[in-house]
Length: 624
Image (cartoon, rainbow, N blue to C red; front, top):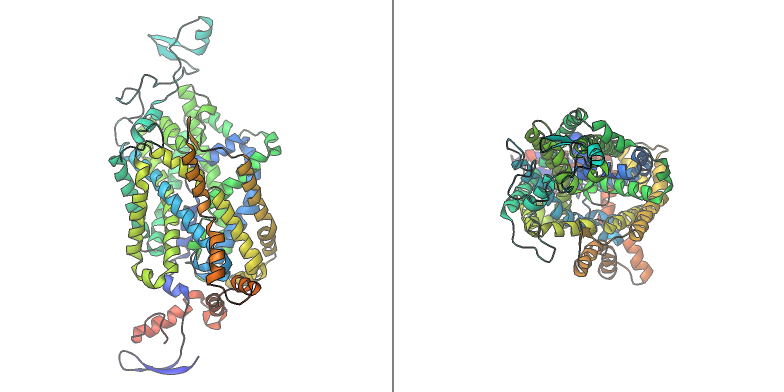
């Protein structure tokens, strides 16, 4: 670097300034305003709807409290290692999921696979937000519309089973014992609850199958538009805007969860529900099903291989303590899942007591839990509209954090690939992306939309996510090199501790083996997509398999493309070697990170350029 003389805008000479040409991506991309912005964003991203509607059911189905044993084991063997791998990798390079593979160009397809997976999921995930908004609007009443069977949409089959503690019939109190002893004739048992009919006939207005989508339901389309508008407001300025939103969206759901738990524990039957939730069946530990469910839940809940963790960490400052975050965020995420289980099952116990339905009948997972079973229980509470608004508002916030995390992954991935054309127009590009996803989501707000929703939900992030996660782990541990990766981590954090070798063991052997186990078990236990009693036609299942493989197909496709068009050398070994080695751009990143001028991390050059810019006409990123 040469000494140079330069006149600033005021005509004064800037003496003794070294010429620095910066290619530091953090200068262009920006950073989180505060460390807490990043931590809350990761918590909000990881803590999603699955913590509320999937984990409690899996815990109940797999032997109650016993499920926590494989769950915690899988957390330490697969969840935390993958979370730390992506956090450290993204922070070191300050690159998005696509351009970060300059570290090993052979695996560029991993980044595009992450973008595709997140892109497919955000299309149907925001439908859940639209349903939630619909329930919020319809909760502002004196009596919830799904409380009784007296509405115009209710059928003759609407009602409840005979409660075990009895009910009034023709002015006489009747219970199950009297029915058996006195041979009393009671009406046929009805199992279609008011909430179930409200969900299927009002919210969804279901058609008879995916072949009959029907017209767009504009009231639901408006809710979808509102959901995408909120997402856009959160991400329009990148991490500068989303980093401030999470102070509310990532914390307020916990306040509502505490309120719901306190209310649930005061309800009749709450102890029964919690008893079912924590009942310990030790024999389940001998089955492979419980271990697969635990590993899968860890994988889906924490969010590795989606690209969101990598994207968020890429906006960290260079010397940020990402190891601390990689311990804290997974523990908070798993604790939230366990806590949410108490909230859900306390309320389900109350519903079982009030309706006469067994816990087995009301303990379900997925949309049925939060849009049918839980609303049914809330409708039986005093001040039901208030609790309904709070519950669905909590769901909206929980989903919002995850949604703008995945959307930011898509946007950052594409912008980092085309920075000259898109980075200065990020707000406009974000708006266009949100509009595109809104249009792609319109088929899901038709009368047959629930069938499209279930098809995407079934296939889009199943095998593809596992394959991408396993390939990512192998690419960094074996091809980029675990020793080189550890050196990068030590350089960022400034210390070397013995626990690194535990992570190396997981990255090299344990974590890939667990993911292979999940893949093999998933294929072995594969069941074609269905919705209730409806079985999908063969052409719909074929589309589902196409969605399952389109993302991981990017990995071999880009391997072939890069071999023929991006590699260097005359022979096959030379070309492959050039694709395995980091590119010159990556080496410049490493050189910058290792330079003495980088004492303050990625922002060191930013400060130099900022000072000179204030005194002259120099622009950030320009030689000074």
